[in-house]
Image (cartoon, rainbow, N blue to C red; front, side):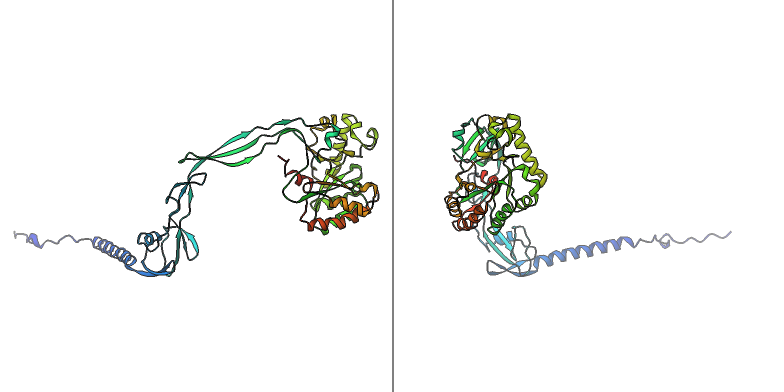
Length: 399
């Protein structure tokens, strides 16, 4: 039997190597060369910029901070301030101010070709702080509730009192404190005063309307002079004159009550002090309701009592229904129809912060209309502004 022919071991077919590995190696090498080349390009590429008016050459990827490190600009840093704005640490405020092409930015911003960079001194920086609140107690003043006391001022303020608030800021590093804001307390009790604002303001007030024709004529004068006034209205006259009242409100004038029917009945048309406590409340409440029904909003709880009869038990009886009762400092006595010149002269005697009493209802008020037509522009020439009673109250009581 013939022997089988066997190939020598070295001639046995070798196992074929996979081509994947060399390909992957090639890709990795090329990627590394690409990334390295990219970063090398980024590092060695240069371009020009302008720094504070001077041309400078920088590398791609450089930031404003690099300009500072290389002394291409030497701004003075701001200071670290305590909460009271005294210098706590010199040079530890903001490092500098930076704009690139006119836009504010910071030192970490990368530079771009042809950028216009402005680097200025740093701003002061206030230390970190904490805030706390303190309450300010209110005081109670019973006030002079006599009829004689009423005439000591035009504003008669009723208040249950309200605490004030003081906000204190304390520096975390300095320990210093500053008063950040203060809301003054509103004292309780009954206060009588005339406003004493530093501004030249005056409150024009009109009683006994709304009235056919006259009230509209007064509004014409106010509108022509960009002036406002407060109308103390008779409640039972409002429904028949609702449109003129809406116009007054739309013009920014204030509509308040002068009672429902000027204290008719037991008040004899002159004084709610002659009425029972229940009747007094009804006079005010019905006056509010008549205004609200026309204007579709609650009126200010600011009243004018007929004849200035707001004293004694009247104050106690109306305490929960009234925030303020408004008298007057200047009485034009226009209800007497003393003549245009007399009314005009009284108006022109006003001082800043005072309240002027006039009438738009209750009779012929043509003299009043003509007097304000002459007086309001003159007062405006003297720098007076015409405010509502609520605006006058915001000035607060004299200290």
